[in-house]
Length: 204
Length: 204
Image (cartoon, rainbow over all chains, first blue to last red):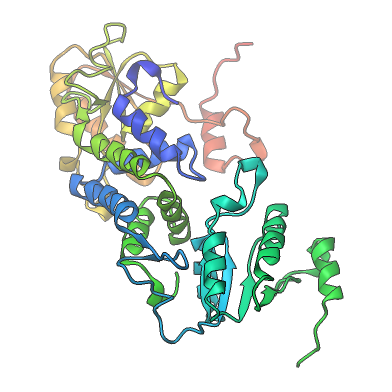
């Protein structure tokens, strides 16, 4: 990156660490490191402290896997949520995306990943046992599978389906189709094909 | 960003801090925060520690402003460098860029900014006094101005020129012209015009 003889071990270590973030290359990492170098010392300490506290102090709900600042779960403990519906997602990010829509009022179950033999992730590495325990409780009437359409996502959905059907619950999946604002011409054939096969009554 | 009732103060603080980095929006900041949340705790502590150490432990050369891990200056103390030429730049980043070319063997002088009345940066806020002190030493024969071509850069160059000519030194500036690989058609008129006016002997 820069002339070896004038490199600083402190700067290089900071650049290495920043470049380990997803989507951050070494050039961007250097820019970020030089920015931090120009900031007041207290600001850099606050910056670093916030990240350490996030990792060390945050709690996870033992039931659904949601994050929380204390021992309660902001979703499971909310009396306004519908406790008979559980939406199964891969990660916390998916929960935040679905919450953003304001269209879902049930509970969640965060798997913590998807089944991926290539990455060495099997069913035992995911929170599937915890899901079975929740279903065994008898309160849940519907499980919504909201997994990705990748091969891993489909595999996971199929595996979960086999597990879930042991319990008397309805299993649904989020609707697939042509997105709002998408052009038919640029929609892939699989999506368009399924969206025609699963056509809905027109409600003007 | 996400439903207020399910926000985590720890996550929001981390996102706020990450979004304060240049070029990082709130969406990217959330992605980075969730990435760190999924990393082992020791990794996040190492990450944060590297940034704090960078800011607190790094030293600056009292003469040229270059960074260093100890009390020596990697450039000023290098006996292979030509001590009679000093290149004046705005920031450390410019030093790293010039070092990258491998075409410069003199010393540097980092101003720490450029004169910008709009941002409230005057000559007194920059390391101009330190430059005068170096020139008064008598060892320097040439000062190369390597500042940006913005109005602030030109103002700073003119101000420095007036200061420098008090001393018996040659003042030069880096060559401006059409970049290698650039298309004449897409070069701005000012650059192309100056590059014709300052044409050089052809050395095939």
